[in-house]
Length: 511
Image (tube, rainbow, N blue to C red):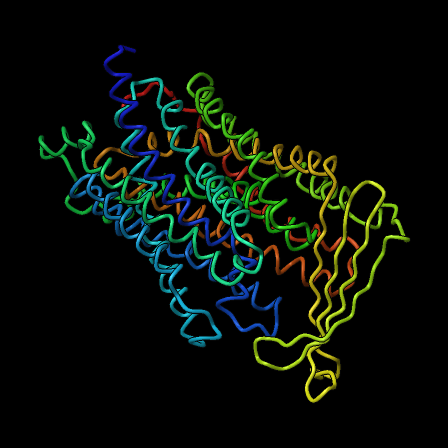
């Protein structure tokens, strides 16, 4: 490849990647702060219901992504790649900033979750139009035979966006006191995004249109009705469905299990300190991110199919052993308690409703350096416990701070899951771009990508967490593994369809 074309494509990669990374940052801030947000925008009477409601609102942003893909994909195929994903960037940035401005449930009642939901839907619509534009734009600039390598840089942006969201949250937590962060500091990561969006907009404003699209437009070969040509044409629709059920559906659940479900699992099921989880997840993501590039490059050499299918197969086989190992590594049932260091403190405190709570704080230490804290809050009314469904209303919050050795064990186990993610996700952009003709590419590739990731992947945290809670209430001793059935089954279906029907096509073909 000539030096000139290398320079040109690096400019394209930088502009596309930065904007896409910021959009993922905006999108994932909500998920990264789900535990905190559940206490701000939803009724506090039932913490489990509030957390599930937060995950459902998080999922709603994914569910509308296919609609964003249709709307903005159509625009991208009609007026061009550049202008369309400039609009998506501004829409995403504005919605994220405003989420950070919404008053809490205690201040405005049910308007709080309603406004969050509306802005979350706008985020989903914007992201639905962003990815297809960025991937198409880069692929149409890439030299023949190197599309897997160059588009894999776009694939890193989702993980980098998540990584930066975790780092911004950690930095904010470290600068502020826990009380300040809980009161207003959690809003800062939402506000920070508006600065990054402004910078990215200025960069994208100076980009040129994709040469492949510009040529098609000059020759009058662009589509007049991208939706009809993409989905009304039986031949093209067959490839749309194959891309969805044979690739992006499985890729979506592997992506969200390896990153988001792993994070929620450690914070809620394993009760590990939130800052510790953010740190170890950030390290695992940082170590795993270069493998997106590796597998994108490798897909140019040996084809996309077997790398993606291999990632799915490894995930199907290894998820349950990995999560069993994660849970048992930090389980206090497997540790030696230093009984002489156990303390129990009982106190009365006034809550925000200006009634009294009876609070019992238990602290324990273990021989390996693990610490355990359990705070039980008994809500009182006229000096006696509030009774709900015949029982005293008690809120329990458990926080475990794990040892350094356990941290590195979890980093390794999450890193292995990130490798599966890089295998299925690294080659997917080039794979999708190569499936569809230029005049309907933005529309055709965006829909299966966002249905696979938005519907099948985006619903994963809520569905899997629900399975875990149900299994725990049912007395299943391995309740913590039940949430994995969803990604395992979906990935297995996608693996079978992909292996049977997807061809390992010529990666040097012109597009």
